[in-house]
Structure formats: C-alpha cells, structure tokens
Length: 78
Image (cartoon, rainbow, N blue to C red; front, side, top):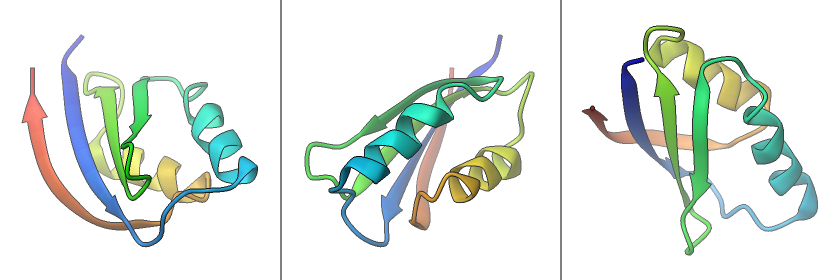
C-alpha cells in the first residue's frame, strides 16, 4: 500500500448532521483509508491508498459525497 495524505480547505464549515454522514460514507469507498475533519470544521485531511486510487478519484469521491472543497493545500507521500 502506498499511503498518500491530502489536505483541503473547505468552501464552508461542515456543521450539520448531513455533513457528518457524508464524511462517514466516504470511509466505505475502496482505497480511502481515513478522512478527518479539522477541529475548526473548515479543513479536511484525507489518507488514501495510491495503489487503488488517484488524486482525481479522491476528489471526485469527495465531491460526490457533497464535501465542498475549496482548493488543495498540500500532498505528502508515505
């Protein structure tokens, strides 16, 4: 497994139950390892298996699950 971590700013804070349900649902996507919301509720960190998904796939899944991404901040491979 090649784990990659992506950090994103969000267009808005995630504050309601529906937002949290969407984050929980992302964990069922094959290749997604971890999705963590920052305490400030306006940033998200995603760990995924790069041998299963590409960055564009991760971003497409986040969009499909209603996560309002603003822009990608940085990427670290590990």
